Image (cartoon, rainbow, N blue to C red; front, side, top):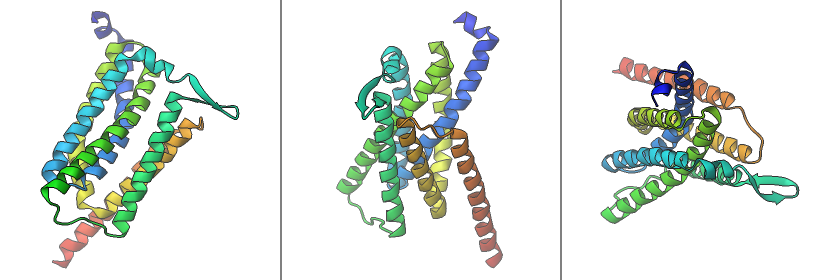
Length: 242
């Protein structure tokens, strides 16, 4: 451990891997922010905290199972000469789940299907299903994140440190992101479109067709910048009309 602290290569690997884990965690934060916007604020905060804690737990557990995890990339199913591993199957299933969930949420937004006057039982049920959906997506994103970490670093200490730092940053940023998404309906629609895009990328990865993440993140950043200026323009127009 002392050798790692004094090794420039270890610090470079830690910084690089931490940055990559933060970028990969953006998808997780967006999904959780969209989900918790459907439930009342006290429960939304608790669901967000539980979701990000589970994201950290899943990542650390997967890191502790390195041998088993590496085996997930070995082919287990062949369909007409096309080989699929457990990782591929999980990514395909997770991507399809994201696409279906985001499409359902977009439909609900377009149709303005907002539930009103929930009683305690229905609110508890909504909270439970939000947590269940967060668990499913946490598992998918954690798997992708940890396999990436294994490919970039050799030392378990570096991987765990990078994952913990990334999850802390995800936790700090999730509150502002969730509030912003809840307060601006057009931003929520944009976030749902991002989830469809990410879901398609996961399915493509599962079928061995890799879409460079740089293209996806550039599209997200560019669209988010345009939406930011739209929000600022609407705010300035409201101020001018008063």
